[in-house]
Image (cartoon, rainbow, N blue to C red; front, side, top):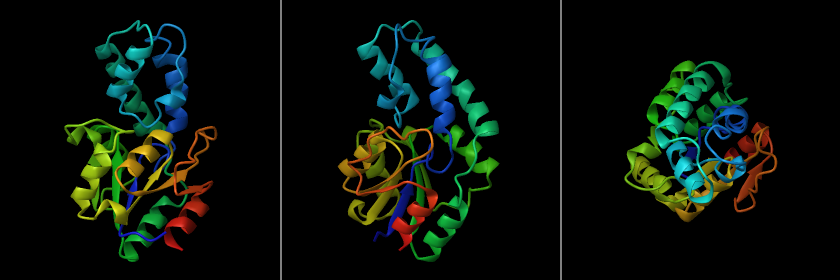
Length: 214
């Protein structure tokens, strides 16, 4: 897939964090905050602060937004500091992309302190030309296009010459609405998510490498 820049989502793409987030959301965070049940597939890829607003519009809430946010921040320390693994072959993939002349960036809905914890744990600070968090923008997170439009500006590459790698429908929609190509990446926890809006779908790290490099 031709491009001048490749923009990677973090959760579920760079690290296998989605499986842990789904587990803790379904078993702890959502039951303690929402009356009845909530579908985590609808909120995958969204900023955790915006998840509360999304749920509040559709459900009776049993916890305040401050309590909800605090629980996410506590979970993040454990997930990024202890649990996640780097996706197989990711370090080599980034090296090959940069050697081929592509700009490589991380673009995430997560705040910088979560991202930094992951970067430090896997010694990836030098792997990216730019690290972008949705908290930097005065706009809405995924599925709105704001964060990807901002990321294109930050790396100095036109959106139509960027490829975004995303594991969620919200992320794919965000990239496409920003005018980018999108590659859907199926991680082990999200087999059921609809990635049909992506320009290509990778079922494995090997397929992702083939799509991006060959």
